Image 1 (cartoon, rainbow, N blue to C red):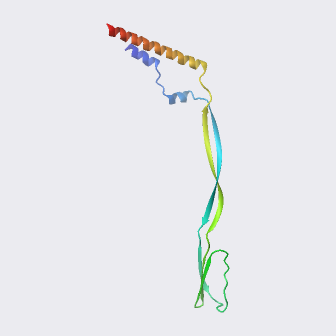
Image 2 (image 1 turned 90 degrees about the vertical axis):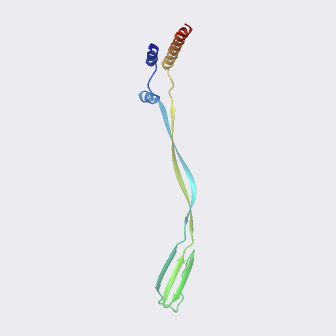
Image 3 (image 1 turned 45 degrees about the vertical axis):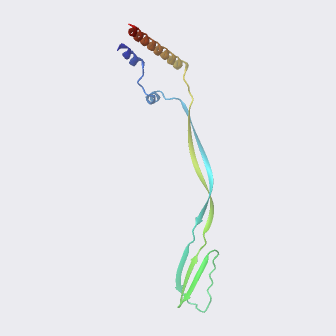
Length: 142
């Protein structure tokens, strides 16, 4: 029983997270911004415009000038119906995507006295384990 109490006294109950809260490691934070350019094509679908009006000059020819697309004109009983369908339009655009990367690196390692305490702790743990095996072996042989 006394060996269990000794083991509990020499062992630590602190988790790694709590250890980092008490003693935060020194680290450097590097933030990198990168911009990626990409080309894309924007397509505007064809559009239709329809309108109706009274044809006041039925004797004359009416001319519609359209650069791209189709025009349909219907004359009937003093009225004129016009349907204009434009051609689809393509635009080339360059877009930017921005990415931010955060890189964390721990700068500081263990100091000499921290390494010494770790070595002393390992030595005492080895002594404790050896003495427990010695006592158990002695009782087993009797």
